[in-house]
Image (cartoon, rainbow, N blue to C red):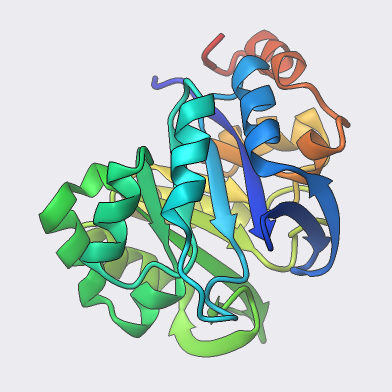
Amino acid sequence: MLAKRIIPCLDIKDGRTVKGVNFVNLRDAGDPVELGKLYSEKGADELVFLDITATHEKRKTLASLAKNIAKNLNIPFTIGGGIRSVEDVDVLLQSGADKISINSAAVRNPDLIGDLAKAFGSQFVVVAVDAKLIDGEWMVFLSGGRVKTEVRLFDWVKECQERGAGEILFTSMDHDGTKAGFANDPLAKISTELSIPIIASGGAGTMEHFYETFTEGKADAGLAASIFHFREMEIMDLKKYLSEKGVSVRR
């Protein structure tokens, strides 16, 4: 069995790491490069950096941020926010990013997934999907959770895989920032129906929540923000706990 990955996520707004609840009420959590460096030293397997204002304010993710991160890290990192073209990705990968994440642009232009996979390889393409349970149906949202679509979650993630996505980063907006646990039912359905890795996001609050998402949710990786940013949980303590519970993790 492949080792499960622990991934701190750094949401970036105006050059600072921020964290909110249900995608709103953001508070400052520090400098993203310094935090990333700390996590690299503390046992994180990977990092995800997302410019959450990029789609909202029509700004592109800065290549200089990727360069700065790459200079300070020795673990893989994914960067996303405002990516709309092969050219955008080329600049980021040349600047040191290991993978890129696309979200809103992929829904608006699904061909982008295939274009990126063809240009760089599926292993570089992470499709982030933000979804919310509406009248019993999981629906996809865009632009940092501000725009509801008529796209159904399970149909969309299957299409993403078919078009060449190498990984899915699924965030439950209902669980985001609540620290009440991951959305394991939809995660299990996605993980069962797809063959590519699934990253669970939204709701981590305890070590048990990670154990549950790896066992009940069948996720390949667990992503979290505030519990790591505000030092509520140490990554190596989490890995020790998971290992003792029989979950394979990188040490």
